[in-house]
Image (cartoon, rainbow, N blue to C red; front, side):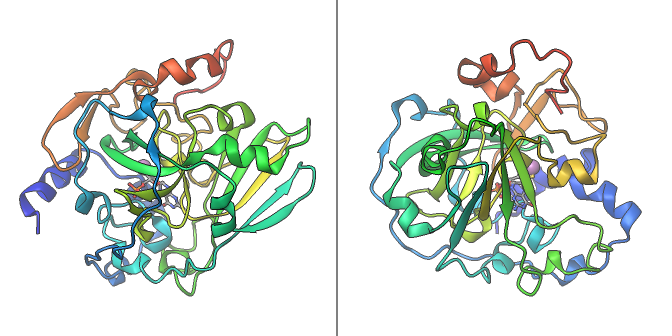
Length: 314
Ligand SMILES: Nc1nc2c(c(=O)[nH]1)N[C@H]1C(S)=C(S)[C@@H](COP(=O)(O)O)O[C@H]1N2
Ligand SMILES: [Mo]
C-alpha cells in the first residue's frame, strides 16, 4: 500500500538519521522487528461538532492524507519504527484520567469526557514539523491549552507546565525494559513555559480529520505546538504539572547535545547531524524551505524577546 509514497520517506531517512538510530548504536537494540507492522483504520466515530478557528483555517499547504497521518507516526512507547498504529491500538483510552498537580490552587483529577465539557472545542488546520525534517498538515479538533491552564488555576510561583504520558510497559512494548537496552527514560515527558502554554497557538488535540483522535496519534489527548519541533507535542497525556523548575524532557535526557527545551523551528540552526533548511511534506515528494517558528512567528516570536543566551532552536 502506498509503496511509491513510502519510498519518498525512505529516501529521506537514508539521508537523515532518525532520532532513535543514534541512541540504538550505543544502547543495543533488540527486537524492533517484533513490533508488528500493520495498518489499522481508526474507528468510525464522529468527531464533536466544532467550528474552524478562522486564524487557523488554512495551513497554506495541502492537508496530508488521513491514511498517512494515522499510520506513519513517532510514538516510541510502541516501538521505534513509524509503523506502530496496530500496536498502539492496544492502548486502553476509555476511561482516561488526567491528573492536574503541582503549583495550583487545588490539585485534581479529571476524566477526559468531563474535561471536554469544560473547554471550547474548535477545529484548526496547522503545519507539523518533525525534527527529522519531514512535515505534514493536520486538521485537528481540540481546544486551546490555555483553557486547561485556566481550569488548573496555577499559583503565582508556577513558571512551567510539565506533561507526562502513560507508563504501561505491559501494553506498550517500547516501555518494556530491555527492548532498547532499558535506556529510555520513561514515561515520556515534555514541558513549556507558562507563557508558551497560554499562547493562542498552543493546542490540545482531541480529534483529527473530523473523528476522535486515533491512538497512533496520541489518543485521547495530545499537545500540539506547531512552532516547535514535533517531539515537543507529547501524546496521550496523563499528567499536567505546574512547577517553578524547567522540566527536562524525554529527548533532552537522552541526548542533551541534540535536543533542548525550546526546540523552536529554525532553518538556520541545523541539527548536529543534519540540515534543517528544508522539509519534505509527507505523502508527496515536495520539498519546502523550513520557516522560522514553522511560519507561526506572528503568534510566538514575542515570547522569546531578550532571550539571546538561550538555545532557542534546538
Ligand atoms: N508520548 C509520546 N509523544 C510523542 C512522541 C513519542 O514518541 N511519545 N513522539 C513525538 C514526535 S518526535 C513527533 S514528530 C510527534 C508525531 O506525531 P504523529 O505521530 O501524530 O505525527 O509526536 C511526538 N509526541
Ligand atoms: Mo518528531
